Image (cartoon, rainbow, N blue to C red; front, side, top):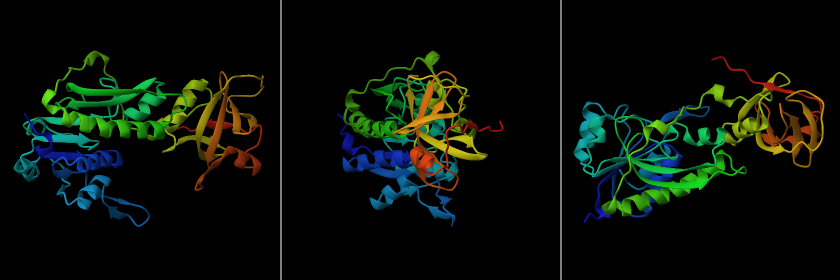
Amino acid sequence: MIDSKKLKIVFMGTPDFAAFHLEKLIENKFNVVAVYSQPDKPKGRGKKLLPTPCKEIAVKNNIPVFQPLNINKNEDFETLKQLSPDLIITVAYGKILKEKVINLPKLGSWNVHASILPKYRGAAPIQRAIENGEKETGISIFKIVKELDAGPVALIEKFSITEKDNFESIYNKLLNIGTNSLIKFLEEINELKTTEQDHKDSTYAHKIENKDLTVDFNWNSYKIFNKIRAYDPVPGVKVIFKDEIVKIFDAEILENHKEYSGISGEVVDYNKNGIIIKTSDNLLLIKRIQFPGKKVISTLDALNGRKINIGDVFLKYSVEE
């Protein structure tokens, strides 16, 4: 019988999402012998090197931290080998592991992934699920294999995506479910069973690019609505307004209770919650906006401040492919 609290775990992760998982392991007194994270990157106006969120947690808890450019090569792999891990756990590490790394731990290498596999393998599963109008998402813990996110799944936890959800709310739900699922996975490792993914049902969640952050009010309302909430509150979708690039947030579809003349993208009315914009098939309420170099404000404040007027038109932000 394996005592999961005594297993030597090497944790690999980089951003906040991963750091919360690492913190949960430490709180539950699992034996994290080392943390691997991407190299520190310069941030802010001063371009000061800042530690990754996972590195911060590791340092705070006196856990050795390694930040190799390529863990698969030479002395970096030898260092990992000397740690003799029983398990490798990865959460948003951001680097590809080669087979010699994957196969190093006695009990395998495992990943916590923010989708219901085999759907949305890849870098941006949360945003892609929302913008595609999915009705549910979840967390999958799977065994890492050579092919990307294609290994057998040990645990899946699902929940519904409602029309009130945006990127932030889904992220927070996934964080809560992911950390608890990881603990459950480790505590039940003696009864571990896996299920092969049905590869023919797989989809790929491409990394977010600038071209993804545009909306066109000639689209139907649901497509625009899903796109806006997939990137709310960060980084926000972009449109052209009075020859400037602005970001819009917090949308709601309105049933067309009133006929409006005008073109797609035109501000046709407002209510107590924000401005009302015509789409190809309906009306969309937009509650918040960000002008260049400014903070996010309510569209009502923008309307009252004469930054927006009835009859103004929002145009598509075009990105060169």
